[in-house]
Length: 94
Image 1 (spheres, rainbow, N blue to C red):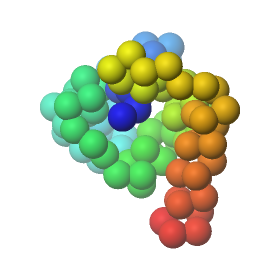
Image 2: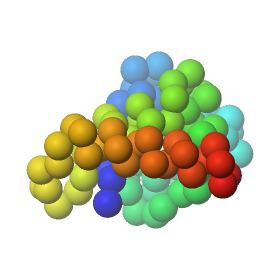
Image 3: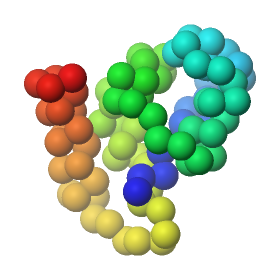
């Protein structure tokens, strides 16, 4: 499983946004957003797309910058392939 929560936290810190601000922009509660950052729940691709829009980055960048949990070593090529696959799903099935 991807550790997207850590990546979301890095971006939020970079822009000096609060959890409440990001949650309001994407239309969820602050508690729900906190759970995302702590990798306690999954979230939809449409919500991930909203987060990407907040930071003006493509979704695949969030995925590429996220690590797989449980200390699995994954090549950058595999991470990019996963990102491209998710982007394909969003564009053509989303």
